[in-house]
Length: 307
Image 1 (cartoon, rainbow, N blue to C red):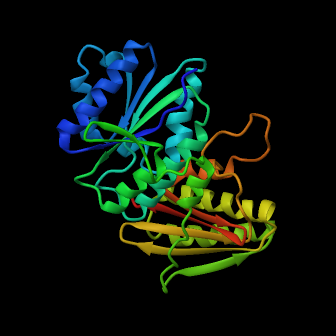
Image 2 (tube, rainbow, N blue to C red; image 1 turned 90 degrees about the horizontal axis):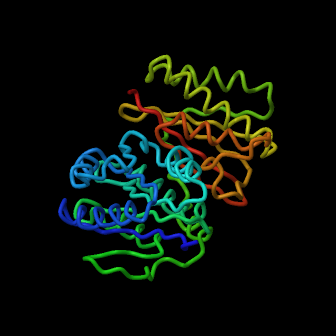
Image 3 (cartoon, rainbow, N blue to C red; image 1 turned 135 degrees about the vertical axis):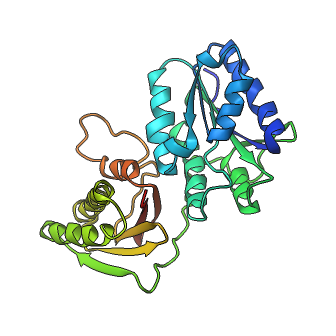
């Protein structure tokens, strides 16, 4: 089995993007690998056109839609694609962060990239992640060097001096504390299962002022799952804080639990396991999920846009 590879490609404009990705995809197709390309829409069309003659042998996904929440990329795209081709080497091109990502989304993208190393450790796979070094800010490029064992810059492939070689330690390095909520945020505490009805009512009241009925219900369900996790796994108590930002609502759960599995919510639990699906569901429902966990407690912050 060929060792797992996770190179980061720094490119400049469309020419650099195509130069680095077309050869990768063509070589994978020629080797008989199943290939997934998940990049933002404009690059998706560009690469599909450049793969004339073999495009029907590639699975394409628009990362702006499928990966809107970076926490959804592993459990909804990358890991299912690998599982669908068990016993074969898979090759993937991904671009989880682009210039349109918000300041809140970019750290979540770095965490996703770090967790790829843990999720695919020992797997027969090659995942090429592309970065537009002209359009992206220096901090995002720095995160690329931290989360990829190998980098490709100006056609040169080199070990990343910023990658420490430990997938779990790399994930921990981007497990940064979240900024405090704004002063106008509203909070409610809870301790046991009887409090969940009040939690749902609180979230529904706040969410309904921003979201339509379906998305309001999705936010209520997500926060119910997080509050339930607090009670069942962290022993309670917990606190939910809610505030509005332009065009979206933000909800946050804090408790005294410590999530020790860095891939919690990023992979399917065993079929008969009674646990492990709450965070997975939250990633599916919400547009963004941020988490900071430590021995002193865990904070999970989710966002849902009005549309």
